[in-house]
Length: 232
Image 1 (spheres, one colour):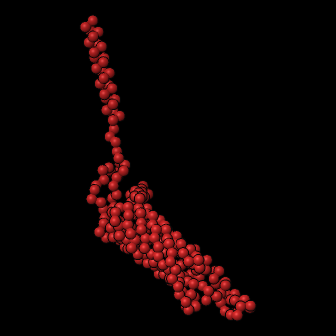
Image 2: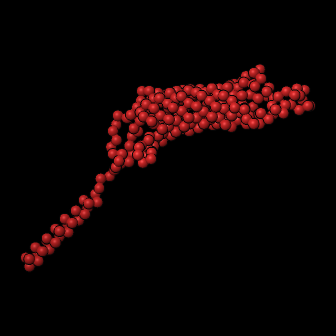
Image 3: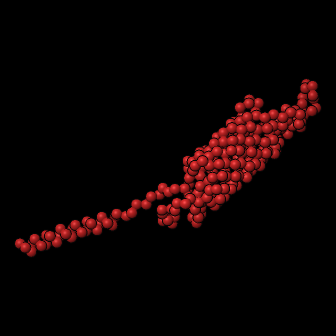
C-alpha cells in the first residue's frame, strides 16, 4: 500500500513538473513593434524644383524655396513656399499663333499674344499635418525612415500677358500630400504633390509636382533609444 502511495505521489509530481516546464517553453517574451520616432524636425528649409503640367497652353518648370517650422511631430506651418516658373509653350498655343487671326477679325494676320497670360511665379503659406511615420527596408540592406504629410493653405500666382502689356495676380487654394525620406538627422528628400485651385473663373487650375532637398535645423535624432534591435 505504501509502495503504491509513493508511486502515485511521484507520478503526480512528475505530471506537475512537466506541465510547468511546458508552460515555461511557450511563455516567450512579448515584443512591442510600436516605437517612438527616431527623427524629429524643427526648422526645415527646402530647395526645390517643380513641374506644372495641366495648363492647356503652357507647361511650367519652376525653382523655389520654402521654410517650415514644426510645432510638434504631427503639426507644422509652412511659412512660405515661393517659386519662380519658366513657361514652355504647348502645341495648342503654338498652332494658334501660327495660324493667326481669321480674316474677319479687325486684327487679321496678328497672333493671339494679347489673349494668353503666362504664369511668372506662385507663392503660398500652408498648414501641415503628419500622422504617418514609416520605417522602410531598402534592398534588404538598410533602413530608411519616412513621413507622410497632408498640406493645405492658400496663396497667389502672378501672370503676364504674352505681349507684356498687362499683368495680373490671381489667388488660389492648394491641397496636397508630401512624402519625406530622411537621408540623415539633418537632411531629407521630399516628394510634393499639390493641386492649385484658382478662385477666379478666368484662370485654369493646375497641379505642381515637386522634388525638394531639405535641411533640418534645430532637430535631429531622438534622444530615446529603440527598445528592440532592428535586426530582430
